[in-house]
Image (cartoon, rainbow over all chains, first blue to last red; front, side):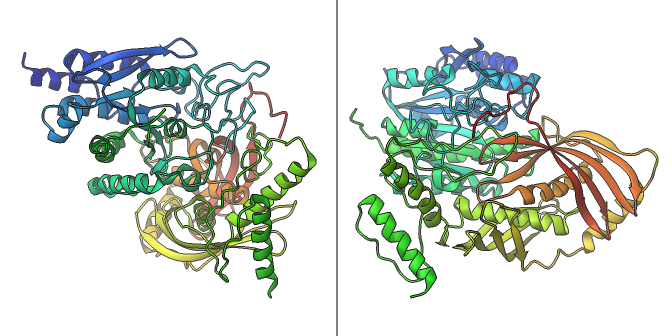
Length: 320
Length: 312
């Protein structure tokens, strides 16, 4: 059958406007790869604490170790609109390649890596046990409480402000940096690759677009540039439905938070590091109605595209 | 020289002594002070969190080995807080937004109903000043929005966070004079009459459910739960919290008493700074004439299979 028909058919089988269980998401990833074999591959980067496979979707038109953009969704389990947005976005990239001139030119020189379920154990737990779970599901010696906050576990100001050393806390940073296998899997990939130019982590809720640092409120050297990129990105986001986002550093906009992923990415030399907090601003909070998934993903795509185009157009070299 | 100016200059001088940096130029009030980064000996101090029975969050202040560093550390804690929260604030940064959120909780306790549920839309201006008794006062200009109709209004407000060991809830005054009640009055009276009964008492749960869905006809009771929760969120708020209601776990109507509809609510609150989900029970009473009141507010333990926090 024609490729376009195959795309339509697959699109109608997976409901992008709904929240799906982990198994359905994993099945859909295989479908996407099968339908876009020249563009998308599925990379196993390791397993979660409870031995769920962690897959990254790699969008690449070739080359060897091209400069790359990283996007992760779902690191905090209860933030369901984050992976839902990731899935829609992955599909959008696959479908628009070859049709959207800007995206096509981007993918002809850069790769995009998407980790849709950065915390698969947590995500599964929110479906079957506790909708409000945030952390991983690792066991802590000497405690009945489980899990560490995977976004306090990175090696960037580890153990600093905005974290807890109590395993029962939702901000528990874990026994040490990279103790959570979900985090170390990503760290290993990024380090081994060595050519990421942008690192974007997607969360919910609050409608914010943030740049480093969280562990310190002191301005980073690239603050002016990142702020400009961020302001332009949220302007494009707002153009679709009028959704308002604030832009600023993590520490100043939301709170001091140490051991976060985009702080680590920035400090290792990945300049264009951003974190999104998607819809809404507290009315539904984590329980965002499913009918807002596609509007959220659609408006966020405009911001993501802006950032990615900027990264494409502003190559840089990092000394390590 | 006024005591206030003395205090500001003393802060700056001490800061410089700690940092070893040249004296910053201080202009007379209003002083614009961004959160000042101290080059820390130990990690930058965390703003102190309210003591909560079930909270596992604790401060991460590593204890330096020698006494001199310890004293410096203690000075850094108080200085950091003083400097961060005095003068004109960036309205988009968290200190202003947290204070503004308190205003909204206050307004909901006064004006909220099953058909009016206010939320913070934007902070336009914010200043903060230290009060003599170690309390703090914020002066704000905010736009609030009714989450049901979308109507927006701008008002000014003052929030006083009491200091000292006793603490206590924030005190709020605003210029807001009450929403235009024309639109909601009919709906409120219809709802009141429909449920003013001792039979077929309403009950519901999971508003919204995991998928964000609120069962048809239950929306007013979701809103009412949010408004009633503002009583809790207001009294629990400090400069180090940001509360939203995450979910109504259950709502159970009781027999009407003194012409007030009454509901037992079980709610989950999301506290953004600690990222904790906090479980409260409360009794909400409501009538179109009296508005919403909350009583018998009770904090429930975080979870039964978790250890209570052993340390602070």
